[in-house]
Image (cartoon, rainbow over all chains, first blue to last red):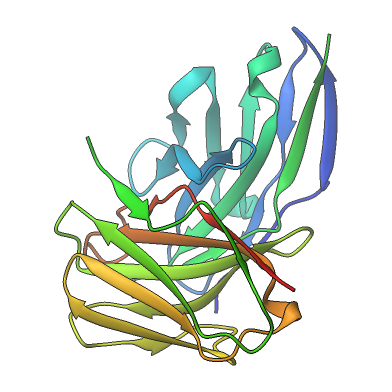
Length: 112
Length: 114
């Protein structure tokens, strides 16, 4: 069975500082991994995904994530936070049956 | 542009009412999903469908049913709404590539049951 753990339900960073949102997964098969962002009162929007190939994945809005199989992690980073990055972020893992398993989310606050 | 639409953004219903939430996608996707989102709990899968007239229970199907008569449309039904079903409901769809393809989400319906 698949599961996702996001460490830290709330993260605050200063504008211009590094953003690091943590995600660990549990999967019995090679995982497909995703990060989504949700702005207030909106649906989820895909930031990036890892399926196969290069373990460092670049996404939209300057975000990237690295798949580390030995650590079962897929942490999301951005070198310099912007005010517009304030949102809720969800990590997800999927299985071959097309079902997704989401973490409980991390709310990112950017302090001016 | 890819699109998933939901029939209402905000909905207020009374306890005991039958509630219909509709979702339409224009991407010819095989898979469609209904989630509810609550603070601190993330997204929890209610039902999903991988083909017309097919449905599978998710993690929290109790109190809900679904209908998929056409490929593009997936409806969530609350047979008798209760206050504990007050939540944000999100619909999603995806293609069938054995988990590799992302899910596309609608804007959500915020349902309040009084």
